[in-house]
Length: 153
Image (cartoon, rainbow, N blue to C red; front, side, top):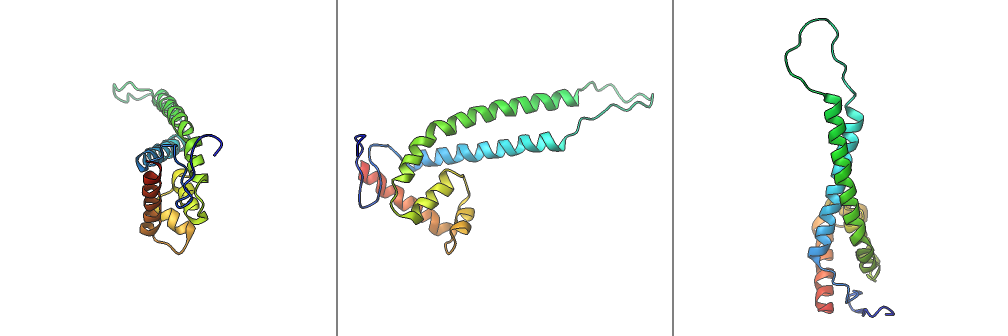
């Protein structure tokens, strides 16, 4: 290859990239955590209308709280977490994408794209691929990565 990396024609793996199962799994976990945090923020934004205090003239206890302020603080905190996670995911994605694009087998390449770029569960990957179980798609992935690790090491 032009950039000094070598292509293993047997596995389709690109050596010199240092791609490991551990690295792919860390990326996957960060992507899943990002997606869950985004869903939480969206739920808080859409399912928590501001509450107005009751104006009935009756005392309602001594609790001093600001639900709207608390919600705003929670949303701001989630926004900061999301920004950090998006940065982490974007940082690794180009190299992971290059690794995936180097997979010659279209079936295996699709499994990797669904799992490590769209952050889908093995069950969802198997359902989209069709004709495979969660165990079979995960085995194809792990087998490919082990071969690639041996080929680049």
